[in-house]
Length: 96
Image (cartoon, rainbow, N blue to C red; front, side, top):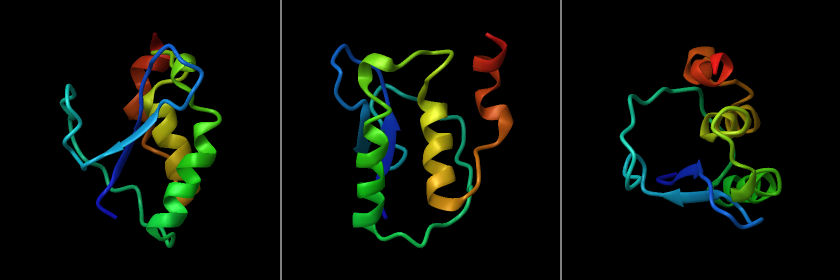
Protein backbone atom coordinates (compact mmCIF):
# COMPACT_ATOMS: atom_id res chain seq x y z
CA UNK A 1 0.00 0.00 0.00
CA UNK A 2 3.04 2.28 -0.23
CA UNK A 3 3.53 2.56 3.55
CA UNK A 4 6.11 0.90 5.76
CA UNK A 5 5.51 0.43 9.49
CA UNK A 6 8.27 0.09 12.07
CA UNK A 7 8.74 0.01 15.85
CA UNK A 8 11.27 2.05 17.78
CA UNK A 9 12.14 3.23 21.27
CA UNK A 10 11.33 6.42 23.14
CA UNK A 11 10.64 7.28 26.78
CA UNK A 12 6.87 7.78 26.65
CA UNK A 13 4.20 5.11 27.26
CA UNK A 14 2.70 5.87 23.83
CA UNK A 15 2.99 3.95 20.60
CA UNK A 16 6.43 3.17 19.28
CA UNK A 17 4.98 2.20 15.91
CA UNK A 18 5.56 4.71 13.15
CA UNK A 19 5.03 4.80 9.41
CA UNK A 20 7.02 6.08 6.49
CA UNK A 21 7.96 5.62 2.88
CA UNK A 22 9.16 2.06 2.18
CA UNK A 23 12.94 1.57 2.45
CA UNK A 24 13.49 5.24 3.38
CA UNK A 25 13.60 5.27 7.19
CA UNK A 26 16.08 7.98 8.19
CA UNK A 27 19.02 6.70 10.20
CA UNK A 28 18.62 3.05 9.19
CA UNK A 29 20.29 0.90 6.56
CA UNK A 30 18.33 -2.20 5.68
CA UNK A 31 20.06 -5.41 4.69
CA UNK A 32 17.39 -6.79 2.37
CA UNK A 33 13.69 -7.00 1.62
CA UNK A 34 11.93 -10.30 2.22
CA UNK A 35 8.55 -11.14 0.74
CA UNK A 36 6.60 -12.87 3.50
CA UNK A 37 3.30 -12.97 1.68
CA UNK A 38 0.36 -10.86 0.66
CA UNK A 39 -2.62 -9.55 2.59
CA UNK A 40 -6.23 -9.19 1.58
CA UNK A 41 -6.59 -6.19 3.90
CA UNK A 42 -7.01 -2.73 2.44
CA UNK A 43 -5.02 0.33 3.58
CA UNK A 44 -7.57 1.36 6.24
CA UNK A 45 -7.72 -2.17 7.63
CA UNK A 46 -3.93 -2.38 7.79
CA UNK A 47 -3.78 0.94 9.62
CA UNK A 48 -6.45 -0.32 12.03
CA UNK A 49 -4.36 -3.42 12.69
CA UNK A 50 -1.34 -1.23 13.44
CA UNK A 51 -3.43 0.79 15.87
CA UNK A 52 -4.36 -2.44 17.67
CA UNK A 53 -0.72 -3.56 17.77
CA UNK A 54 0.21 -0.13 19.17
CA UNK A 55 -1.22 -1.11 22.56
CA UNK A 56 1.49 -3.79 22.89
CA UNK A 57 4.29 -1.81 21.23
CA UNK A 58 4.79 1.37 23.21
CA UNK A 59 8.09 3.18 22.84
CA UNK A 60 9.04 2.70 26.48
CA UNK A 61 8.76 -1.11 26.19
CA UNK A 62 11.32 -1.42 23.38
CA UNK A 63 14.18 -3.75 24.32
CA UNK A 64 16.96 -4.73 21.94
CA UNK A 65 16.82 -8.37 23.06
CA UNK A 66 13.24 -9.12 24.14
CA UNK A 67 11.02 -6.67 22.23
CA UNK A 68 12.61 -5.09 19.18
CA UNK A 69 11.56 -4.11 15.66
CA UNK A 70 11.86 -7.72 14.50
CA UNK A 71 9.42 -8.91 17.16
CA UNK A 72 7.01 -6.23 15.91
CA UNK A 73 7.53 -7.31 12.29
CA UNK A 74 6.85 -10.92 13.19
CA UNK A 75 3.58 -10.06 14.95
CA UNK A 76 2.51 -7.80 12.07
CA UNK A 77 3.36 -10.44 9.45
CA UNK A 78 1.43 -13.12 11.34
CA UNK A 79 -1.65 -10.87 11.48
CA UNK A 80 -1.35 -9.71 7.86
CA UNK A 81 -0.33 -12.93 6.10
CA UNK A 82 -0.54 -15.76 8.61
CA UNK A 83 3.20 -16.33 8.14
CA UNK A 84 6.10 -15.45 10.48
CA UNK A 85 9.34 -13.74 9.54
CA UNK A 86 12.28 -16.12 8.89
CA UNK A 87 13.92 -17.32 12.12
CA UNK A 88 17.35 -16.02 11.11
CA UNK A 89 16.10 -12.41 11.08
CA UNK A 90 16.08 -12.13 14.88
CA UNK A 91 18.81 -14.67 15.62
CA UNK A 92 21.08 -12.17 17.42
CA UNK A 93 18.33 -11.29 19.89
CA UNK A 94 17.84 -14.98 20.72
CA UNK A 95 21.58 -15.53 21.18
CA UNK A 96 22.17 -12.26 23.07
